[in-house]
Structures are given as C-alpha cells and as structure tokens.
Length: 119
Image (tube, rainbow, N blue to C red; front, side, top):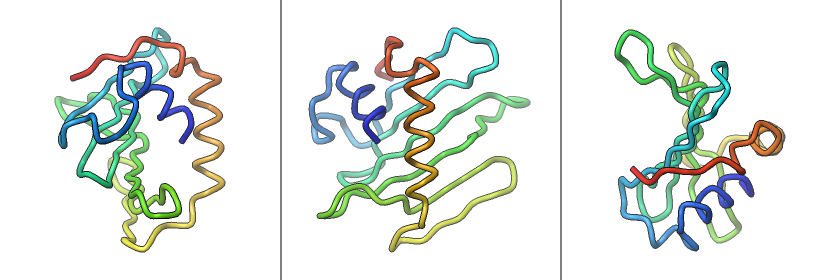
C-alpha cells in the first residue's frame, strides 16, 4: 500500500479525504507491456487500485483490488482478474502476501516515480 500512498502524494493528495468520491488518479507506464495503474476513491473508506487495459472497447482489470479502511489499516475486500475471476468478502480477503508482493513490484516497475494524472 505504500506505493499507492506515494502515487496519491505525487498527485497532490496528502490524505484520502482530499479526493472526491469517484475521483481517480492514473499512472501511464512508458513500457508497452505494462498496463496503466488507476487508483479510484469509491467512498470515504474504500479505494480501488487496478492495472487496466482496453480490450475490444472494454476496460479490463489485471488485477483490481478494492481496499477498505478499518481502524487497523487497509483490508482487501475484493479481488478481480478480468475477464472471469472475482472474489468478494466484506470482512476481508487473506491477501497480505499478494499485496506486499504487488506493492514491491509497483515500485520496481516505476509506477511510483512516474507522473500521475488526476482524472
């Protein structure tokens, strides 16, 4: 989650409250084989983080994680891998290792250093 927080700060947002519900930040990657990273505020306590690409006019998610903020931090409540896979659990999905690995890869792949665009 530290990579996502860094992207939000680079876009000029110090806290999630500064982003309007429905607001999004996009990070385009220079490499042809890397999907865009899109961070969207769904509600006061929910944030979507997704790699997206277009396929036959549809926006695809590869993957998308929806995080919910609890008193203890951020918990993944939805995992989506288009076109066929989606898991939802409002109490939280056991994805700590995946989130940690993904966070590390976002830094390695240059998303944190790229210029985010507020949509």
